[in-house]
Image (tube, rainbow, N blue to C red):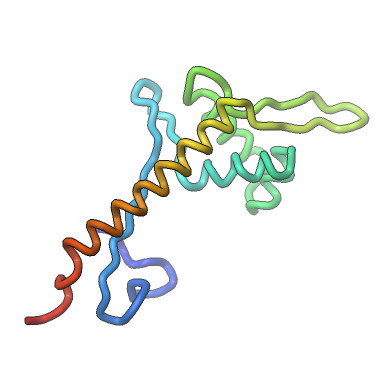
Length: 133
């Protein structure tokens, strides 16, 4: 069973309306490394900013934490997800590899499918859960 959202004790929607919430992770069973909501947000921030440091700053985390997560993401699959470019006078940067971009596409596709399934399950199973009859 999933806990109520951090915004309060009430579920989203009407006071007596139940909603199904679901989360998932893409997991490498051999290494235990995974991609979830937070790591996807980091990949998206790197793609948007072109920098691990800027992505970390945007997300309110330390560069060290972001770099540790990038290393974990790079160890997840057959290829790295993020390429780091050397610094220098012009500064370095980072970008997603084709595998990193594909990972985001797969994650978002699965997220959309899961949301549709959750709506169907919600309609089927939760319609009368909290209603007294």
